[in-house]
Amino acid sequence: MFEEYAAVKPLDPWEIGQYLKRIGYTGSREPVKETLDALIYAHQCSVPFETLDPHDFGITVDLHPDAVFDKIVRKGRGGYCLELNGSFYRLLISLGFEVRPCLCRVLLGTEEWTHPIDHRTNLVTVGGRTYFCDVGVGGPMPPAGLDIAREDWQDLRGELFRVAPDLPGWRAIRRRTRAGGDLYNENCVAERTEMLFTTIHCYETDVQFLNQYMSGNPQALHVQHRILNLRTADGYRAIWDDEYKELRDGQILKTGIGDNLHQILEEKFGIVV
Image (cartoon, rainbow, N blue to C red; front, side, top):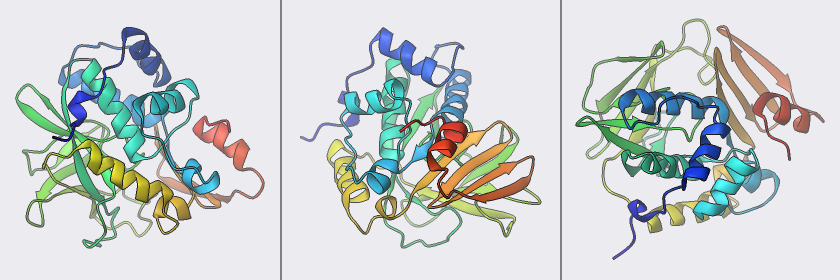
């Protein structure tokens, strides 16, 4: 029998404290919905999605829990979905939450339903309800737990999301875009599908297989492109290859990176490499 993620060793009290310090969280640790929402938002605003290891350094990502903790917490780096949502899973179970991983297909408005499975996130059950909880994309994921049993629009920190049935076995995360400008959809359609997810149980071997391809195959998106995303209090920050983009107060700002990559990484994403 393959080992499920539930067998991952929890963080010890010192590691929990260091992790919470890394994301700037000082609130309650009680495993309730309010804590979950606050942790998601703090994580999204503190730990960037980034593909520097596979793209810039040619390193296949190490998903061993200790290696991920060292990278994100001790070294102040970010990571991509398998690292970030896997690490967040470990934090949540250490705080007493009921969590299980699920596999996803990232669309970000492309409507390409044939896109391969390329993402993992977490489903968290609190008070008898199950929530989609993602800290592994940056933006534009829900900034709090999204109730997967509801199909109406849910207002999460002023952003609107809903869960809609899709292909058999799949559900879609729909998002209403910002009026006047959106970092991830400059054409400003009224709404779009960000991600498909399934509630089928997945296993350690599923994620390890994805990791070998996504961070080690020359054809993989994360190897071919430098991608960074980070939520901010009033928008998002992002890098795609050699362009920096920022959504601030409804306005999209763009600039070429040139020779300023290390400066931008440190000033905008808190990453020192």
